[in-house]
Picture (cartoon, rainbow, N blue to C red):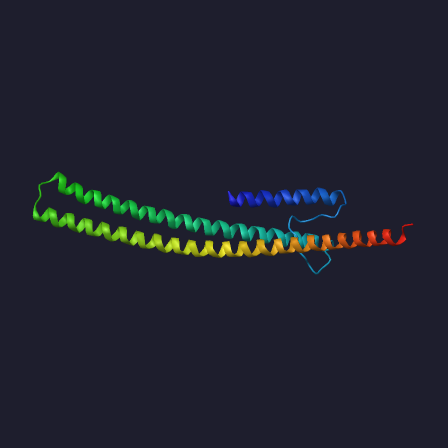
Length: 180
């Protein structure tokens, strides 16, 4: 789905840029990037760069998500194996007469199943700790980006308000000074 979505976005962007170029307007990318070259002359190289970034980023997100889901399925499979072994060890004892040999087999089966369950729990805790660290970093980065963007917006509004206030004050002073 991710590969198809990136492909559709790339084709859609290319078609929209083709229509814009045909209508002889300046085309714009969906993100703001500052290049220190002539953007109209090297438009197709910039577009290729944008497509490459989009594809690499999409593939990285897809690879990380697939790897995480694979680990999750692996852990669930280990839990199923442990559950099956516990169930099988107990069923042996219920179906047959209780003898010392059956009791030893049942104990060994339960010990093996508990060991597998312990390993699955250890792996799931490890995966969860890695996921928590990744989410913590993403949340911190998101808060920093939001703070900087809000600071920039407030700075722009403050400058706009100061300019408007200065214009209003100067107009009021001019009206007061030059009124009859």
